Image (cartoon, rainbow, N blue to C red):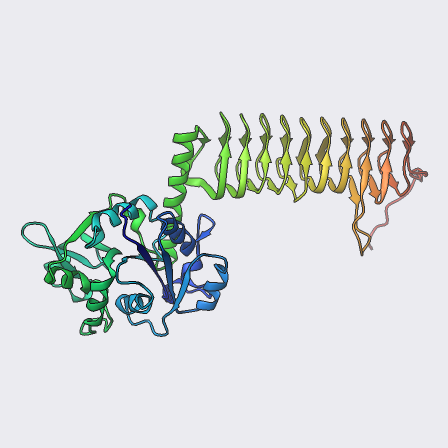
Amino acid sequence: MASYPLSVVVLAAGEGKRMHSDLPKVLHPIAGQPMLGRVLDAAQALAPSVIHVVHGHAGETVKAAFADAPVNWVYQAEQLGTGHAVMQALAQVSDGHQVLVLCADVPLISAQTLRDLVEAAGEGVSLLSVCLAEPRGYGRVLRDADGAVMGIVEEKDATDTQRQINEVNTGVMCLPAKPLRRWLSDLDTTNAQGEYYLTDCIAQARRASVGVQSLVCDDPWEVQGVNDRLQLAAVERACQRRQAETLMREHGLGIADPSRFDLRGTLSVGRDCFIEPNVIIEGTVSLGDRVTIGPSTRLLDTHISSDTAVLGHCEILDTHVGAGCQIGPFARLRPGTVLADKAKVGNFVETKKAQIGSRSKVNHLSYIGDAELGEDVNVGAGTITCNYDGQAKHLTKIGNGVFIGSNTALVAPVAVGDGAMIGAGTTIRDDVPSDTLAVTDGRARQIPGWQRPHNE
């Protein structure tokens, strides 16, 4: 990076009417992070002197979402164009600074591209452009016969000939603060949109013999703006594809279909992991070696140790899973669940704040909440821990080697000792000592010769 100080101005005041949403446009997420957050991360990587965020529509909501961000908030009362927006922030920028202008709705911009753009500017001007096969809707970059940038013309103000140009303005540029202040003061609104165009400063720089350098971005998705839901979805898929390719190429992660992969946080993986389609990963997730994740599964803030198989249609939240476990299909592990090595949680099982010991099995159709299970426990189908009395949650403790028959209710607080056996259909309200059989008294009554009633 150059030695002169850098101020960043992020334009985030637009209403985003085409989103048809009560949520401010810049807060709509890409891969789980608001668009503005992604732009701020790229800007902060340059270690600027200050980042100014120009806000307007629903500004208090935007500020609240980034209450801890190290930025200076600048209010734009009226949205009168990009030039007007930069004017609001420039009052707080020293003359000796370079000003990097970013758009909060261009979320995939990379820090490296911004570094290159600032370097290209030197003490002059640089702009980031891109060549598009379909440039409709964008301002065109005008060049002279020698290929030097002369200016930018917005599409509504362009001639038919100028509209044939496929090099377009991205809205990202770097300009020296002192002359920029003068150029902005000379702007007017005699254009098709009646706005103050920041892009008009490029022609002013040329007239003032200030060098204008251009950097052509080779990845159109990196500079794709988001104005409606269709563009939001397209940028989301581009971001997810980029993340999937990085994980596959640099970390060896197997992904069955990169087009159906969703990472909305951070993922670290060991060797020979594999992820089936339609898996959603949120928060901070880590996988050991040889972990497989079945289709249509959601993982949030979870660690899964080596040689564990998660079958399809599971939800695993804030959970620690040991090595060699099997989960699912259709299992729901809620926050606070801890599975020791080689534990098994089967289909249609729900756990919450449960510790399940090594080699213990909860195979199907059970709820285990606020519970501690020892090693080698077998929990039969339909078993539930009755952990809530209407006012407070209570703990169920199950020792090592316990066998619990199907359709058992364990009314907490209750403890079952090592080696005990609970008969099917039993309701346990009192502690069961070790090596004890607990069954519910009473047997089914049989009535020979009974006739079913018939409707007349």
